[in-house]
Amino acid sequence: YLEDVAAFYGMRYTPGLRQATLSSKYSRLVFTRDRKACEINGVNTHLSHATALSGKDVLVSSADFDLLLNPVLRGQDLPRMAIKRIMIDPGHGGKDNGTKGRTYVEENVCLELAKRLATHLRKSGYLVSLTRSSDRYLGLSQRPARAASWSADLMVSIHANYVGTSHVTGIETFLLSPSGTASTYGSKPSARKYPGNRFDKANARLAYDVQKSLLAKTGANDRGVKHARFLVLKEAPCPTVLVETGFMSNRTEEKRLGTAAYQEKIAAGIAEGILRFHRAVR
Image 1 (cartoon, one colour):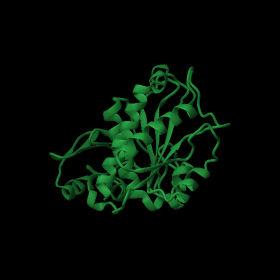
Image 2 (cartoon, rainbow, N blue to C red):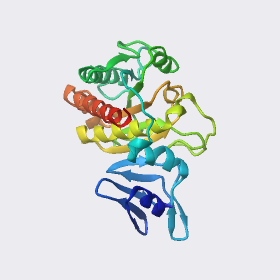
Image 3 (cartoon, rainbow, N blue to C red):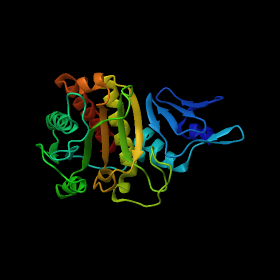
């Protein structure tokens, strides 16, 4: 029950016809009835299960409480870990160009973003490696394998998006769907547990911190924190997120993604999100 969740966190519970709100001087959560839509401190965050009604009361799933809300709202619920070695995975490369806009190609945008992110992280004292540092092809399974062989403590995969309409814009950050849940864009839950599910709680906090920081740095449209079963997430040997940095199908956003100034904002946003996550788990 959301009323019980509010009491657990010491928050005020305000039910409404369509939405229920939990609030305190530190946080504000907005849940939409019968939907997976949730807003945590201004960040669109997709639940694994839609909220449910029991009479006039609103319920949230135990999976979302344990593996999403608690990791985001309570640092003490996170596993303690040292973050020293960070693997950056620029999407695509070589014969795999990724998506294309009118001017830019995804593989090149991803590599530039990865290099800029690496510079930010190294300045903060981290050891950083890239799954690819040039325009070369890597199979999907090779990416988490490289993170594992390098003993990475954290991994970020960088991509650019494309849809069949020019109107969609914004940034979205994906974490691995927990066992027993469906992905954000899927309808069938999967009971299978992948190696990356060992880090469900850390993944949730990392995804939230990265998305929140990216929005603050870029001012981009908030497409939300979402769940998926991408191979790089399933086989991850450490906490991992995949960031879709913008839509190549939107001419304005594509132009922005190709500029050094906006690339710096994205790199700084991801780096700041990683620093926030690190402070939460150390």
